[in-house]
Image 1 (cartoon, one colour):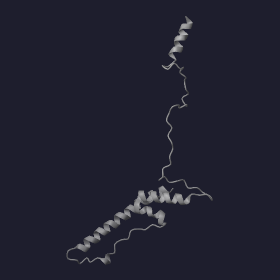
Image 2 (image 1 turned 180 degrees about the horizontal axis):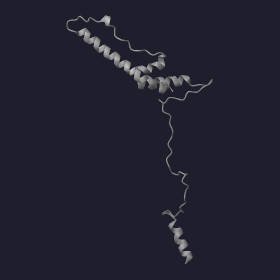
Image 3 (image 1 turned 90 degrees about the vertical axis):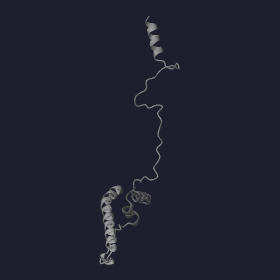
Image 4 (image 1 turned 120 degrees about the vertical axis):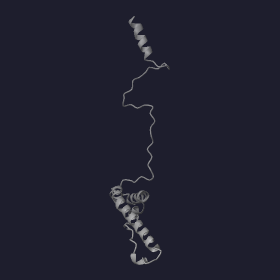
Amino acid sequence: MGDSNQKQSTKSNQDKSGKDEKKTKPWHHRNQPTESKRKDPEAIPVLKYGPSNNFTKFRDALSKAALKEFGPVGKLIKQEKLEMPQEPDRAEYNFADPNGLDRAIYLEELKMYNRRLEEYKKNAPKLFGLIL
């Protein structure tokens, strides 16, 4: 009678194909799809130090990312200087214009200048973080 119980337990351990079921360890991940790791062409590489450095590749990738993300502030990387927006010159406008057209144009250009200046102030720390 002990033999019949043993035979039933071995039959229950077999799957439909008739093969014995083997318990795998939890760290063995069999039959799981492996993901191929592809490099992102727009990714910024890690800067290497020494004679075989990759500074030019690093600077080009950083320049592209900065231009894409921060616009005019991102030009700093490629031009190696920051071009701040110029405030409109009051002397160029005639404020005695009876229609007030020159005054309106000056005020609009002043608003655009202030917006660009705020954009520079907002994006400069973010650009610095991207460089690091």
